Length: 139
Image (spheres, rainbow, N blue to C red):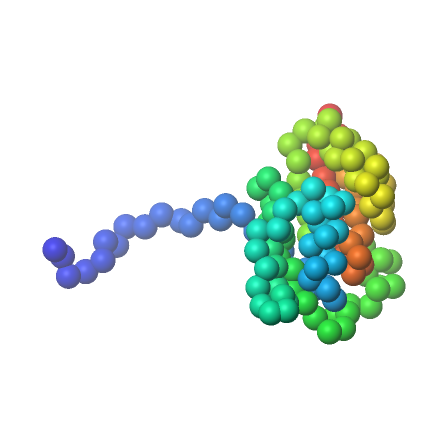
């Protein structure tokens, strides 16, 4: 066995990202993501829980309980400061996702629209005011 590590290496390939949302109540956030957005709870941690992860298809979102909002709500809405962006592959998918969320009574900061750069997207507001962009191709 050689006494040195192999010096050949390949560049790392990042396969996913897991945004972390700051929330006031882990249970309420998990209920929102599962009941309104179709996610499932991957895990909760702590007693009582102060950290969790929700998952849907290839997306994972981490939820971290904090005692007070970390960003001014008016600034967040005015500047559309996104907490996470989630992408679907097809134009029909983004439309169907929007309609499903609309039927579930989700609060939108921005409803489904076509952007000049060729995307269709909408922005959801979670119970803590976090802004989640859902995007897909326009055609």
